[in-house]
Length: 310
Ligand SMILES: Nc1ncnc2c1ncn2[C@@H]1O[C@H](COP(=O)(O)OP(=O)(O)O)[C@@H](O)[C@H]1O
Ligand SMILES: [Mg+2]
Image (cartoon, rainbow, N blue to C red):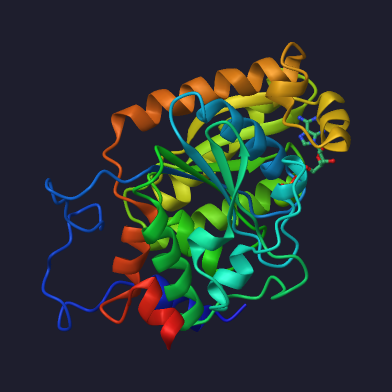
């Protein structure tokens, strides 16, 4: 990836360009009169195949019970969140970031209170987005977030600009790893880069596909110890999820595990994880992922209409 580009996009305007209007958490200041924006959660992992989409599909289904929810697939190359919803949307987030349609035009209804903004499929590849595309992404989410109670983002694998930018702008980041050492290493690398651009962040951790719960806790303890020692960072373990064939069966049927096989060990653990996340999100003031991302991209950010008209 283009690191200079990523760093530039994720950094704040210099103090010279913008006086210190930021809170210590490096988020835009709260405006008590502003409309309420959706609570936002981004599910990430350094490596692909750790179970992000499996988790996000179930969490989104659980979250719709708390209020209107939007599932955003941030994978613009090989997004597949729509498969877990059994949908084939005509328009995707890739169309939004390339200016072909508005974010609202790309949103489709999944069921009840759940909507989907699908990712791209073979359109842009997994390469990092440029400034103009990042602005369209930010403005697109900004235009949607007053309509929802929760926005859940299924992050693309790897250290690409959009996933880092989104993860640095949401209210809560959920890092998914498996006990696989390459997954752990990649998850740690993601956390390291993310936390450099979002001081004070406490990533939440899920260890997925665990055969023995002790193994899951050992994985979490190892990551927590390394992060504390080398990054002076707290990682909070939220859940250890079992290896369970129901994941595969539900993917085949294109249904979330919590709806299709809620009584299997994975379904129960995912429902419990959703409750924990809900409790955590209940404690935070929702800043609005689009609002924060626009702020982070700097004063050059424009509205969705302005960007599309450009
Ligand atoms: N807890 C689990 N037990 C067994 N298989 C799982 C589990 N979680 C995910 N999987 C399987 O792992 C594969 C990758 O999952 P996916 O959600 O697509 O990962 P990602 O979105 O991170 O690339 C899928 O085949 C899925 O069924
Ligand atoms: Mg996925």
